[in-house]
Amino acid sequence: MPKGYIRDSGLLHHKLNINSLIELYSNPLVGASFESFIIEEIIKGLNSTSITNWSPYYYRTRNRAEIDLILDGPFGICPIEVKYGSHTPLKQLITLNQFVEEHKLPFGILINQSDRLEWLTPNIIQIPATYI
Image (cartoon, rainbow, N blue to C red; front, side):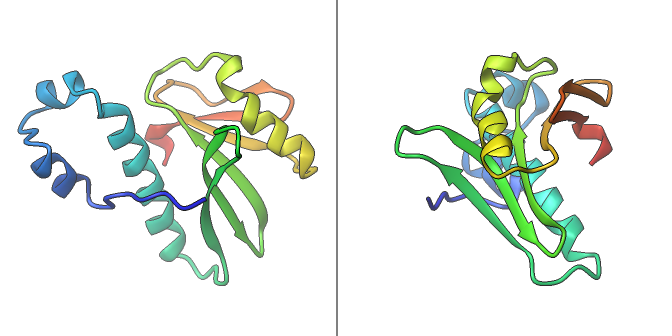
């Protein structure tokens, strides 16, 4: 399922007339902005490596269950969910967990604003955004 992003967060914030951090934090699109920023940083990071033949995808089912980023390349398939908060309830990770199990993947990744790297379930690892 295609999904559009404005890849430049500065341009996005300018178009939304967000001129300060206070305005950003109170804007209803802060979560979408954070998600776009993290996805763009991951894509830029992969582009700066010698890894080739990889593709980023957005995943959404007919029931509107979604995963923010699926990386597919020589390293395999890596599903990544991005959440703005510092704590993500496990019920918000059901689609990620199902995707990992269905595709027999070793793990899925949650990126949020937590302050520590930890396994949330046996197959979902939480990575703080500051590690990206």
